[in-house]
Length: 160
DNA sequence: GCCAACGTTGGC
DNA sequence: GCCAACGTTGGC
Image 1 (cartoon, chains in turn orange, red, purple):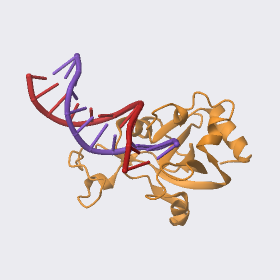
Image 2 (cartoon, chains in turn purple, yellow, cyan):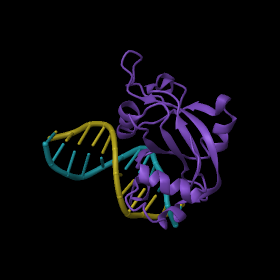
Image 3 (cartoon, chains in turn purple, yellow, green):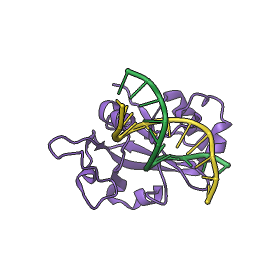
Image 4 (cartoon, helix red, strand yellow):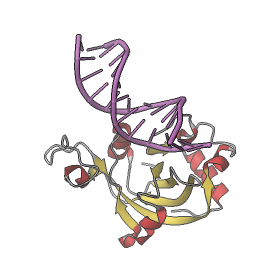
């Protein structure tokens, strides 16, 4: 199975790239995904070792800021069971979990963030999910070609 | 803060 | 199954 590539969004005011870097082993459970399509990508398609573009949304500027990798298969998101969590969902039962997550590990910080505006001007990213109007998916597939374009533009030549 | 676009819910 | 209402996302 060839490696796949993804883009994952996070609001830095909630969880930033630098927050990830301070986690033990630069690794964190990607809590809080509450969208079925995003969940299904994690559940059905993500494999350990897949590449991740780490994107800061609702920030200034919005940008890809780091390269990460998938560090586990999908497993139940414990925050869905936690009544004190903002991600609590009473419909998700221990014996029938509705929401899943994967572990994410930081690999490399971009020398400079690649902003949304820069991405829009790069050739070869026309069909990138992130750049589609109204795109809200927080876990998105990225093609190998898009991955290469982004890493080249970021000045990264030996990722993962 | 605004608001377009989107996903989900629930009445019918 | 339809679709209006609602809540959320996220760029600006």
